[in-house]
Length: 295
Length: 281
Image (cartoon, rainbow over all chains, first blue to last red; front, side, top):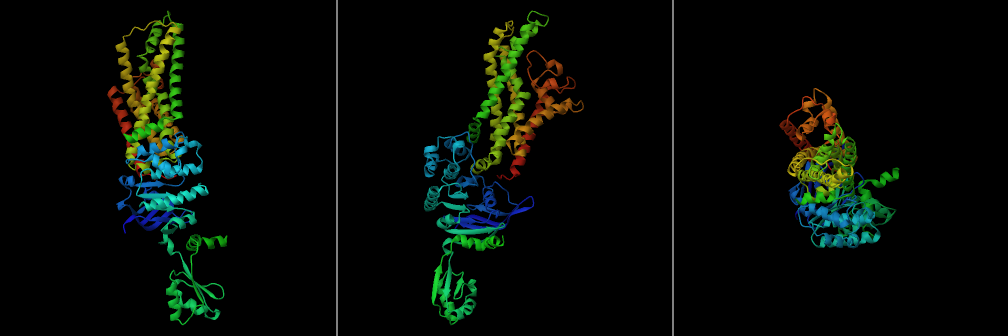
């Protein structure tokens, strides 16, 4: 498949503080991609570099196969970075019109307002908008050029539950239309529900990247006196004892686990495929559970 | 042009209307004071001055008055305010990222900002001219000033010449505001830095060894403002040259070249700084 976003050894230092430390990332076209990481992991810096707002200290990045910064390539990109900001003395529609005039491509302001549910309030000045309405307007600004790539940084912040649900539907609909969505978010449940693929970064480095549906593990129930042998037989999947008669593996394939146990002469009482929440996987990967326990 | 029209749309804001109203009010109040003072000297030894004021307040010649005021300290301060809101405000309001996401060519963004600010300065001249053109004849009538002995062609020529010259000075003020904005990245910082730079120019021009080489004297030479006390008249044509010495002034061409150099240097420096700076926040 074609990479719509690619980063190689991307590094950014701000006055001695390292925001990105050699990030390698590849996002295929047509996916909804979740970009996760704790605060300060470098998510927003990555987006800023991709959009040409920030110059990397070293390393390279490509959008649609073109090296960034690429002002001409931005015509195919819609983006919302952090909390969206607008000109408070202009109406929502006028704000979009001003942005549309700033850009090179033709804009579908009415279409974007309709998709984000802002048509009725588009004539009101932005200074009277709630945070959720500003967030929707930010989404509308990102959508109005009908981009092939959408970069969103915490887009669900400030949205009410109904808004989050609409937003989820919108993302899936965009993905259905062939738009690639790159979604940086702290709302792990949202990412889990809408993303095809997930990457986790920490301290400016990629920790792991995997298909969202692959977040699974296999639980094996064995006799207590066989537990130690079962852990040894399943070491290739980072197995560990869990309770008196259970072994947990990070494998996603129950058949392979069963085969490995059989080869070791162990017959399991039960083999179950479990899907832990993304949150659990994220916390395990980033070590935030341990940090919280220490606090 | 699309980018420029977007910038002009953003300038249509309450602050701009406030600055324009204040500039027009300032010009009118100055005219009111001048006409009142001139009324007192009609028929006296300085009676010629009253005629001169009446001439300055004629609808056509008022353009020279408006251009002189906007090409001096009042105009510089007005553009510093607008630069703070229009350019520095993009950082304070965190909207610069929106602009650059839509249009990534930074030099074009800066060019549109500079041009729109300069056009706002030109509009200030037009507004002040219109205010004086309306108020002038009324004041001349109310204060019983003598008729001015000048032809319409002469008055219009003087006004057009000063207005055209003022456009270069306003471009310099706008470029100073642009540079201040990319350096300070904020509304207040931009206004303070731009106003401070203009005041520094005037202070430096007072120093005899530097006077000839400061932008303040180039403004004076280019605009043809009378130097020193000669500029203190019943209706001042500017708020600039009264601070400067009458001796050692550069000629007209040197003034033009100096201002063109300042304009180019400020625009280039702003482009260099902005082109390399990270846009965060």
